[in-house]
Length: 113
Length: 114
Image 1 (spheres, helix red, strand yellow):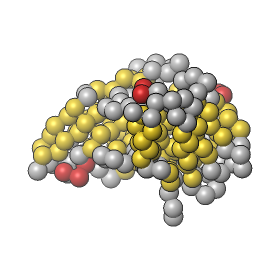
Image 2 (cartoon, chains in turn purple, red):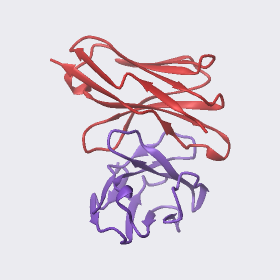
Image 3 (cartoon, chains in turn cyan, purple):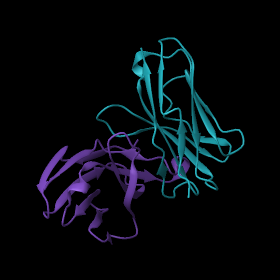
């Protein structure tokens, strides 16, 4: 079946701009996670949704980062006033329930010039 | 919070040899330990996982062992093949309000030479 999909695959933007990254989880998965992966590092947790609500947003670095999942399926990660340090691969994962095996999408590579 | 350390950072083996990657974690409440394989330009792929109620799990050429007392777990790959070459990540997860949140190690670049 279809896995986790993320769009766009690549996003280049200028410092100070606003970006939105989209994640389509595996159908039926109630839990959705966002991670950020810098070059040569392991993924770092950003936020975890159970259904429509953010169960844990402790990994969001600051208030420029925000994520929503209004209908409990697709999620959007929003970054305001982008900075060069935001450049990374943003990964989305989903699982049947919180605590179950997480399946990752291919990621969105964000480059802030 | 949880901290996961992974070693070695790079590992080079000959085809057919075994490879072992080790991880330690800090939070004694962690109870779920997955391993992921990541190829260039792709997202991490789950290859095996273990929960805290067992000490070992095996799936064909891959096995994972867990020592809860020492807070470490290891990935063992036997009869390595060139297609095993990739970056491998260990991770740990605990319960409570952070249920499902994974903390990853720094990764091991595995190279299998034909």
